[in-house]
Image (cartoon, rainbow, N blue to C red):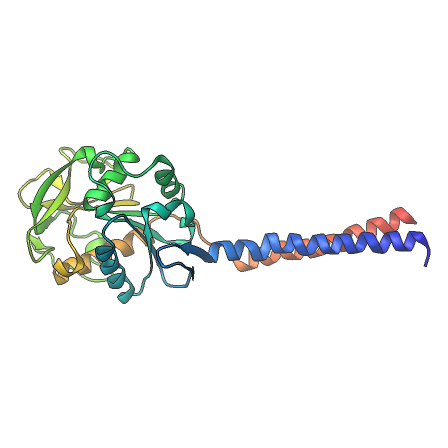
Length: 287
């Protein structure tokens, strides 16, 4: 075997090895990255499934977060409980929706700039719960943020948009006013809207104020659930409405999706064809 043949075989081997690495980068690695995330609360890897997935962020009240998690799981969702301190170590891109727990803050501040950015750049729909939710939305300069809310109490709301999907899918909510959300009076945050704007969706109005809304959305992507209550404190209509809201946010928001397998295979095929193409060029060059 002469030196030219040896050189050509060596080049083929290098190209083949390179194509295998490239194929892994283009095919296996993206799928692995998108399909798994580390949730430190559980201290384990979880795999994304076909069921809609929820990232529930909490700070102090694990008990309440776990109650919501159990409730959502029982209704067909995959839920990961994420403590605020672990936000930067979690791949939020694999989730369908992010829920900001009411215990995550109280006031104009929320976490760190890096934590807020990590959530925001995921481009996922966000459901903000009462205090923590309105505090988080304040960081995004939304109209439904802390600065545009007041603190009140109540157990009901007046439906202001009965035809909206939130009140009809997947469960039809009785079109009655007031609609009782909680079995007991609870604290709540309600957004002040003296004049409606096009980017706001007014869903539920405070029963004692015609200009304050504890159930409201902005840009069809960010929603405030103003009632500061546990699942066990909700009425049947309250839990159904909550599930409808989660369902709507996931279905209505345009969100990044995992790569289509066929698309990945296309790039893998290209990667595997590289050595064949370059080998032909090498042979012509040697000849």
